[in-house]
Length: 358
Image (tube, rainbow, N blue to C red; front, top):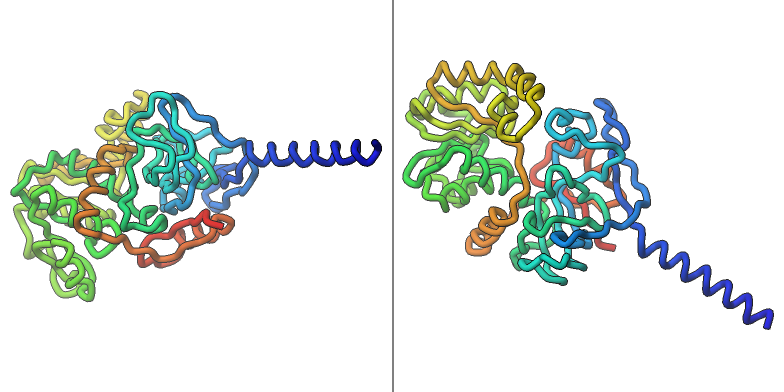
């Protein structure tokens, strides 16, 4: 009887431990806003439950982005004031394990990816609950790690083209077209019927032209401000002094969307930020608004939002063209801080990715 009693206790303790593990997960969290320290804390937290419109994803990979470090440094508090601790990570790939009652577009077992909603990030965890409308199905030809490089960049481009109201038959200049953004922006812009001019390092010319660029400019041998003019749209991926240079090559009434300059008042209104934030960002971005007025063009800043339908459009296009994003380094989830440091300080030749595969 005594032995049986001991066995019962041991089994009971084992079940309790197992149940606890099933209800918790590992996650990497922002715990403080610190301009000098971007370290995340890996901790055990409760596994998320889903609403009727959400799905539960078992995470297989996550993209690591400068945005993740910007959040740690408190640089996006004006746009999205996260309450700490906050599980980090904006870009997710994984397998659906559970669906809410109202979810019709996805099912258990689907391999999906997405840019997580601004107010519901958390890709650096073993599981994440996501609104199904933020997700798309991963093209079969992409690995999980490759898929992790797509959502944020692809959606940035789609939303930039929407903001420009880009029309087929017109011309776009994509600065720094040899980088990761250019690698996706060029084929998407071509698919929308645009003539694409881009610039970058000369040794990448052949690769960029194969992506569909109509004209490539080697920045070391040609000054585009002297040889390009009357451009309808500009996607500014560089910022700094390049923003004004790009305005100088545009037609009157042209549309420039910057990924690197400053938010302005129009951006704050578009994001439905409170009036006081609209005033502050209006002042912060006034320099670029005045610059745009000087050249008779329109200046926009973009902060990419989740959109499963747009991402599915990109996924379908990429499936036809078999476009593969460039991956620099894949880190195991436990080395998340090394990955963030790489993005902050390393010279990447592609995407940095976290893998959750054991």
